[in-house]
Amino acid sequence: MACPHKFHDYLNLRKGYLNPALNELDFEPTTLIVGTFNPSWPENNKAEWFYGRTRNNYLWDVLPRLYNANNLRKSKPQDWRQFCFTNKIALTDLITSIEDADQSNEEHQDVLATYLDTSIADYFSKFTFTPITEILEKYNSITAVYLTRQKGVELFDKEWEKVEKFKRNLHVRDLLTPSASARFQIRDYKMANPNDKTPLRNFIYQSWKEQWHF
Image 1 (tube, rainbow, N blue to C red):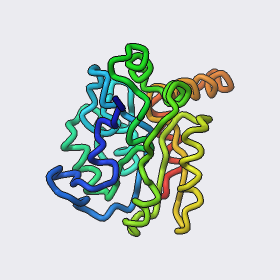
Image 2 (spheres, rainbow, N blue to C red):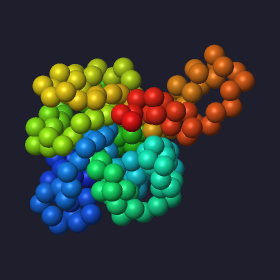
Image 3 (cartoon, rainbow, N blue to C red):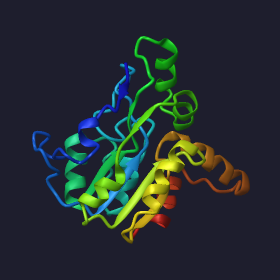
């Protein structure tokens, strides 16, 4: 049995971010943020929407700060969707489904429970990818596209190349993962700058600010 994305109905931007009953996105996005994968199982995945495991993810802290908005890390999904609506931001992920994942296989459960890009890419081999370039074709309003991920994973590099080579002139950038995995980057940074006391949330924010389109 394949493991679909937990929010697969949203991946192609076919359902409203404010009203999930809608058949189309209920605003014209100008910014698209692309993650990697959020599995529908294991059962301990408590995320209620994209980047929703907020104990170990800082997106809803970092992203609002770029727009001089309040920290939403402890807010509800409806607040996250309202923020996206207000700022014309759409969210999706590269992987729609892992086809060779088996929910009855404990090892598969354990691998997915790490939520690590490297673990998913190393262990599984059959994927259905979200057609990001088709989304870009559909929404000419999108001018900036970002991928949040761990660097150096070939599986995602190949998919992201399609976006980088897209025919329309876009602001396309990689962003430091907003997850706790960014601790590896800040560790290396602090080894080179031992007197710097920047907390992880600020380190991610500064990294994103350098790549953002305004």
